[in-house]
Image 1: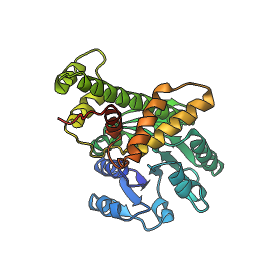
Image 2 (image 1 turned 90 degrees about the horizontal axis):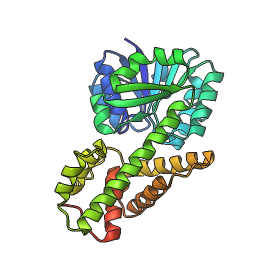
Image 3 (image 1 turned 135 degrees about the vertical axis):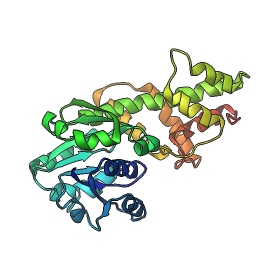
Length: 295
């Protein structure tokens, strides 16, 4: 049993907290807005009114925040986590953020004698609730080994990608694949609709071919049902697509599929779909062709 402080109870955080509690850990929670805290408390967590009280006595501090700005506000700002974390404790950042901000966190924590892992997760609301996330970790091997007991309850698999920063870099590489597959599915369904094909029959083929994908299997039927309920919000994909392009540009690597996906993400956000699922980018692909994919 580990004493954990968990910061950030958004789409992903609340599910993670419930799974940590289910594994027998003691969890104190803190969130910038109060609404999700009651749900965590109902599941057995302890609510902390301040960040400092949340981390008091914690062996491990975990957090999942929405973007660079949130990490700056909670972690790097004056009086934030990086300035008050207990030396010797283990801090695990599960957020998808830029490599630059992650490096700034690491420097601040290590200067204080705090061990730090960048450990962003693949998956969305369903995987967070079911303890089925895929975690990619950067950091010291000993710290990674010590984190096993708190990462196992939230994950299907955990991967040590290398030294500090390797986890957040892998997350952007993986999100490139996600964006590309969503765009490919949108293009394929739009082309099929324009060509007069039965879209359910198209999905039946995509499900069994050697280019099948769990993303196609999950998103495809939802698109035909006109279901864009958010598991991972489009506005977060917009943030991620920008992070990927900045990351790739800094390394001198072309990422044309992400640039194309970002165009349709931006169009979908402008159309008012920012709080819908990331798959809503497909609506902007279909709209450009003047077709409807709902069946």
